[in-house]
Amino acid sequence: MTEIVLASNNAGKIKELKALLPAFHLLSLKDIGFDLEIPEPFETFEENAKEKAKTIFEFCGKNVLADDSGLCVSALNGSPGVHSAYYGGHPRSDEKNNLQLLTALKGNINREANYKAIICLYRKEGVHFFEGTCQGTILEAPQGNAGFGYDPLFVPNGFTQTFAELPLEVKNKLSHRGKAIEKLKAFLDKA
Ligand code: IMP
Image 1 (cartoon, rainbow, N blue to C red):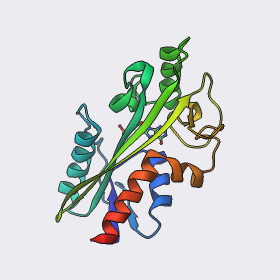
Image 2: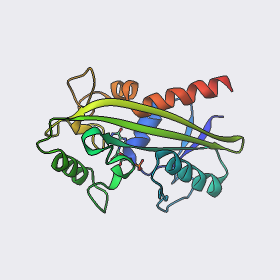
Image 3: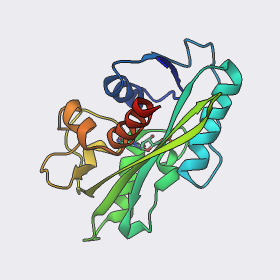
């Protein structure tokens, strides 16, 4: 199984997934001629990842990978969670999302958070899920220009720099997405 369609329009995720899966021939939604928004209407990462993967599998019939992910903040009872992409409103903007997060956490000394990713592999042989989490803390002001989303505010545990300051190879070793993809690779190696 070398060809996989990535069911995402998020440039940040796609860049990371390409670096994490060098042995695969990854196709974009553009490559398969899919140019609509993919629905993610559910309240769990699993259901949204499956919905995205299923939508694209039914469109093209090829092997599909979908990633549904987000930032879960302890002091906000797990928010923004599955609503991470549009936390700051529509249209989606990382800047607005980060500002919304800083506003929600203003004055709060509990800065604990974790990123969570569910990767769904959807093939004619079956559907499989792979999970990854990454614990860290939320800063009071953004730092760094790499990465995407909440990365300028997120410092992984054991580090002093944010994911927007650390090199991609380091983020990919520690991150929720990197851990989920490791599980996917182990699964495919055994199959
Ligand atoms: P979705 O999976 O399309 O619902 O979007 C996930 C959202 O969660 C992104 O738009 C980001 O806001 C956030 N997110 C997920 N993973 C990461 C990451 O690795 N870095 C920064 N933000 C992330």
